[in-house]
Amino acid sequence: MEYFQSISDLIDGLKNLKQEAWIHTDIGIWLSNPLKADFYYLPWDYVQSLDDDEVFADDDGLELPIVLKDKNLMEWMLVNVLAHIANSINWKNEGVKEFIDQVNYYREFDTFKR
Image 1 (cartoon, rainbow, N blue to C red):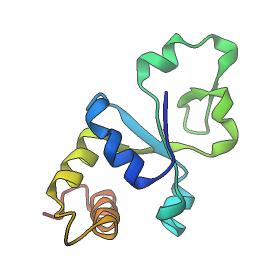
Image 2: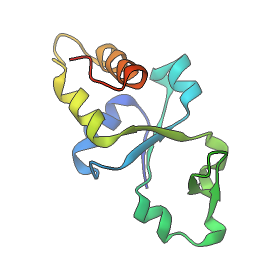
Image 3: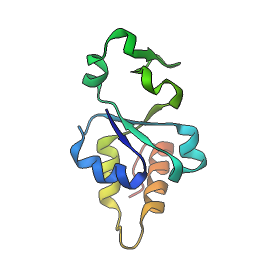
């Protein structure tokens, strides 16, 4: 499990994560104020390595570490999708706002903005 406190922390860490894994966040926070969102990388093999009393099933049946039960986490984006979006941005001219816009576009339309 890895924890990312901000969007920029997450972007900096993407290259070290398994590309097919999910990033989790509280979707309500992401939608209301993405700059306040925090992110969790919970690869399947990590969750599977936990003892039964260390996991819980959320409302969708997704198993998560029990230490994160109060975080209201949901699967948010795949690492490889985030990496593609991050690599498509001209960070000198566009920045985090464009990253947020592109992530939201992808979440709504299931395709890349550019």
